[in-house]
Length: 227
Image 1 (tube, rainbow, N blue to C red):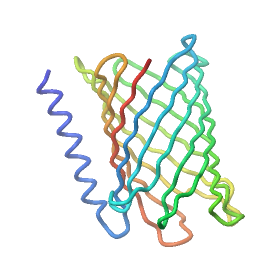
Image 2 (cartoon, helix red, strand yellow):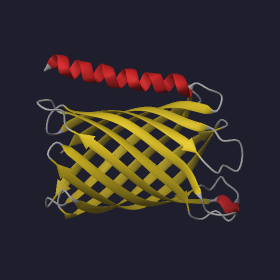
Image 3 (tube, rainbow, N blue to C red):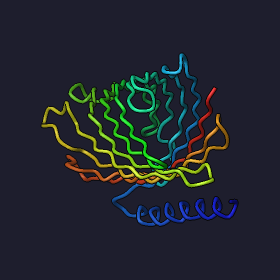
Image 4 (tube, one colour):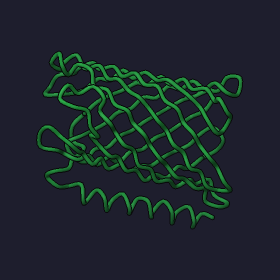
């Protein structure tokens, strides 16, 4: 069992490293993210969570942002369909200055599980307030749709997954359009019923940019604790 765990971990690290090499181009920025989250369920259907995140950009040499998220979700149909809202407080670092942004989100999540496999669709609408921008660009709103597929490795608490997410801009005065596709591969490891680690890699393919596009490549590590 230990050899299986080691083999899968080495495989996902090798896979992420190969994407990192691809990302080290002039038209792509390699970033890293670190997340720590805590959550608790109430009445078996209501869940409240808090997550603190730090992100580095410019090939992971510069502090990009620090964010705090509060999330509340409710399982309308347990293990199948849930709805939720979340709030982000974001401190963004730009040109030696820090700007305070706020993000509001509402979402639905549908999940279907069969044997060891799961297919999920998340639809999310987000509104981000950026006071440092000019008046016509203060609010940046997106409708995001994410399709993901995951599996459980037999006899091991490992869950590899792949996902694709579409970002559609909804309040651009020059015209709404698809602005980005995000692709993700991830590996979650459950240490026990209350603690989990997740290693993930994301690649952002920017579309319909108003100026020279810079695609994004992000390697992240997340720790989640459940009360």
